[in-house]
Length: 111
Length: 185
Image (tube, each protein chain N blue to C red):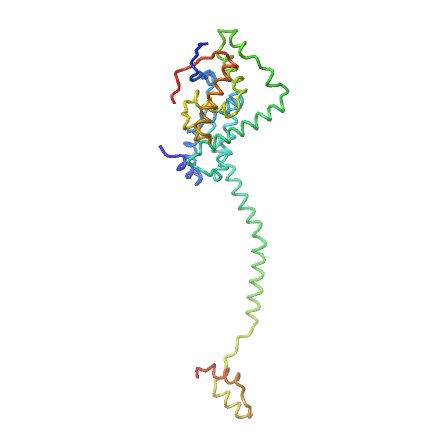
């Protein structure tokens, strides 16, 4: 032991002597374990999303089938009759058309 | 040399090579902080590995990547603290049973290296965490006060103060202990 009144730097080297920590092993272990955990959590998240989405996909499929069926069963909208045919009909039946019927028959003010 | 902030950004994108460089850069400091806290190399290595895993898991929460070193050291410190608390619960042995270091060191001039290490570690356990870290990083790892202050979120003044107090306390515990070359800063 060296006695010195100098309040300078202490010799703490004996603390480390004999210890040779394998930095590479420790760091690579940490990186590897972190990568495994991340992969697990990612697959877990995808799995959860998949489980959550499955009933939604089933519900969407049912709605799609119902919508397609109702569309198929709905008769196509009939074409509006030509204005001259409508006018002839009104004349034959002495029908006085309302403003709305006139607008509909002539498809607005265009004609 | 690539900056810590740049490496942190790469680690966040999943770059393992960047993680390797970043952790390698601070390994020695982390190990010595853990060793100073736990006094056992195997435990210090375990703590480093646990702290590194935790660091990588939480890398997104590192608010100031330029100060990554300080952030990592705080994780190491907390991990070591938790391990020590766990060990203290498991062990009935009191730290106080190892007092009386000065007489032990002074009475045995031919003390073996292993014993000397044990005594140093035991004396270190009587310092506060901040004193111990500043002393180890400065006197053992050769860090400058500016680096220590920056990485430990201390002022320069407090870094110097901790070092001075730590040395004084160590000398009280160990007697007139070996001194190396004068301070580098």
